[in-house]
Image (tube, rainbow, N blue to C red; front, side, top):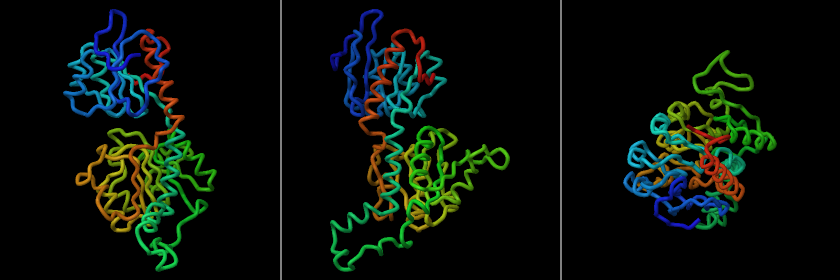
Length: 336
C-alpha cells in the first residue's frame, strides 16, 4: 500500500487510515487494492482525529480514542480496528447505533506483559533502580562498603517468601500465575471486589483477603467503570507493610495520589507501574512524577512491546481487516 494517499476509494473498495503507526508497523501483507493513509501519531484532539478520518471507511488505532462525536462527523466510517486488547474507551451503544463495527487484537501481548510484570517485581523488591543511581551518582558504596542500608525495611524477600495476589484472572493474570508459581511463590487469585462468603468462586479468595495477605499485588485487571479506583487509600492501608503493588493493567485502577501517599508514609514497601491515569504523564501534573517518592519504579506503557507482540498484532490486524472486507463471515475478535 502507498502511504499518505488521500483520494477517496472507488466503489466496493476501502480507504484505510491508521492514526498511530508509531506503535506497530503496518504489515506488508496487506495485498488487497484499497487506499491507505498512515500517520506516525495522532493527538487526542477531536478536530485532528475527525480531519484525518473524514474519508476513511476503516480506521486503525491503538490508544487514540474515536469518540461518538468523531463518529458523527465521519459518515463513511464502517469499521475501527484496535491494535490492542483494551477497548475501555469504546462507547459500544454509540458504535452500534451508527453501525460501525469494532474489532480488537486480544492476546497479542500476553507473554510480553507477563514478563514485564515479573521484571518490575524484581526491580522493585531488589531496589535495582535505586541502587544503580546510588552507584552511578555517589560515593556511598565506597564510604559504607555496602548499600544494604538502602533496604530500610530489612533484607528483601526471596521468591520463596512471596505471596502474590493476582487482581484480574484473564490471560495475563493466568500467565503471571504460571511464572510466579514456577519461581516458588504462593498465589492468591482474587475474586471480584465485594464478593464474599459462599459467592467466592472455587480456587479464589475474596479481594479483601487477597490484598491483606499478599506481599505482591499484581494488577492485571481490565479497566471498566467497576475497576476505576479499585485500589485506593483504604485498600493500600489494609496491605502489609512489606507489600509491593505492580500495575501492568491500566492507569486509574490504582489511585495514584493514594499510592504516592502510601509510599511516602512507608505504608507499603514499594510499587511499580507501566501505566498512568493520563498518558503520557507530564511532570508537574502527574503525582507519580514528583521528586523523592521512595521505591517507585515507572516504565512508559511499554510492557506490551516485544518482537512476538508486534508479529501477533500484525497477524491479528490483517485477519481483522480482511475479515471485515470480505463481509464479516467468520470474523473474530468483534467488540461490537
